[in-house]
Length: 140
Image 1 (tube, rainbow, N blue to C red):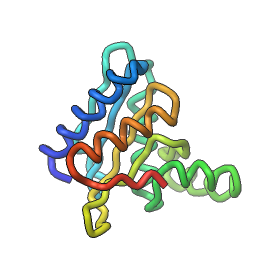
Image 2: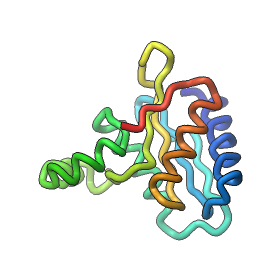
Image 3: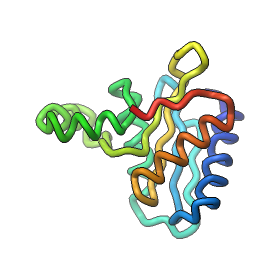
C-alpha cells in the first residue's frame, strides 16, 4: 500500500460516506507491515474515533482477518479475543469496519479502519474505498 493509493482510498471512502449521509468519520489506512500511511478525521468526529478506526485496521492486520470475522470470533470465543487484545495492549477493536486490502492475487497490501457511524456503514465505506482504487476488500 503506497501513499498515493492510501490517499485515493480515503477520498473514495469519504465520497461514499457523503452519498450515504453518514456521521463524521475517522479513517486510518495501514500498509501490510502496520505502518500508518494515511489518516483523516472529518470535522465533528468524537474524541476517540481516531483510536477506534486504527484499532479496527490494526486488529485485522494483527490477526489476518477482517474485523467482521473478529467480531464473530469475539462472540464465539470471548476469552480468546480478550487474551489477544491483552497481548496487543488493548489496540484491537473487534467490530466491523476494519477491512484487509488485497491485490488481485490475494496478497495482503494493508488494512483500512473506519469509525464514526454504525459498524456496517463504516465497513461499507472501507469496501467502497478499496474497490475504487481497483483492489480487493476482505472484510472477514
